[in-house]
Image 1 (cartoon, rainbow, N blue to C red):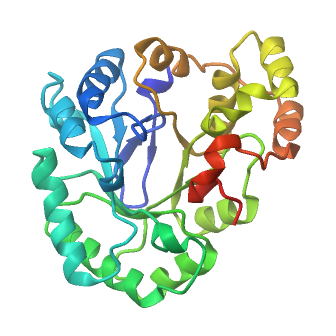
Image 2 (image 1 turned 135 degrees about the horizontal axis):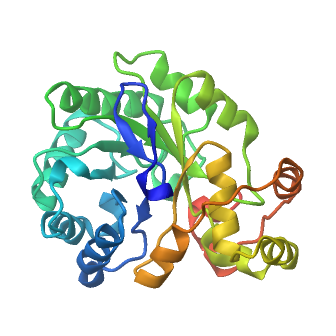
Length: 284
């Protein structure tokens, strides 16, 4: 079962192949969502300072009844933090808010602040934030460190100055959006890719071609989409607070044929509907 399978990060740390995303899960529901996911068998839980639910996610982890060492818990440094001291403070704040002694992974959420998505250069600020992550990693506060939404030039900026290279890049990957060059660059530089919004923020459910292919495999569209990004060698992070959806999302022990993988890979999806207001779906 996929919930029992792991990848190995460049630093030797195992990371479960399937995680629970908590974007859009409100704070008053996140603790129970995390407890439900862990009870079902999830061991990889992802949050962020920007989600506003770190406290509840930490509560869910601490009250789950599963030893902390059996769980892989991630958070993300707010995208607006582009200096060393603010990053140091924010890392400690996340640990305090979550009530945890360490995080298994912490990422820089974006190479630019959200109000300047894919805009100006923040190369120096990202190097400064990375230095804070490295120090927290060396101190044992963070077991691994990485980035999110970083493109190749952003990654090259970190790699040119780091002492601990990024072990993860969490990016948008789903049927209809497969950034091959970036995936290859991450692989070549020993970075595991985590795929957020593997069901395209729900928009892929409207795609008739994907629905027809899912029906042929006898699975749901979300299951097909999660399996697709798994076969790309990434960690899918589907987000849900619904235990039935959590169970269904983990029922992906089937194999998409090479021909069907090529078909899914060739699809293009650029319209995220109402979700296009979010920078990551804006198309900029």
